[in-house]
Length: 158
Image 1: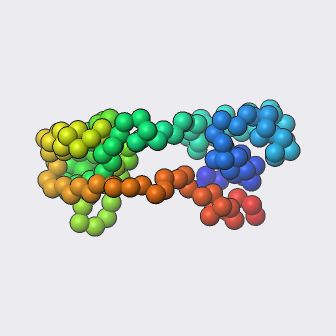
Image 2: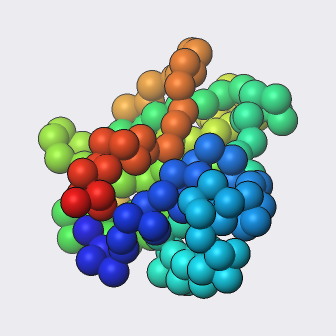
């Protein structure tokens, strides 16, 4: 937890989660503080990478119809960092994490279609350290969301 954050920072983040394009003037009005305060706080939160203002695209509406989760076992284990670095460079990878359990890495990938996914899998298998993979297709996505800040509200409002 970043100890530099306070209740106002938290409230700014909540406003931006409602609408990432919300103007600083409207945020200032909602929170009853000056626009300069909002500008300074948002600048700091952006510099610290606490928040990034991005446009979220619906993958299916722009042509990505093969969305999958890939588990990867890396051998030898000393290659995990390097393998993850190479995987992170693949443009199809939207999420990459080291995990516990049978596999070492988990990726979410977005491909145009099944043929594109097969090409990607072939490319992944050429990366040094990739030993075994398991791929699960997402057939229908019901929810993609940002973290619910209310779950940590007590940390910032005491």
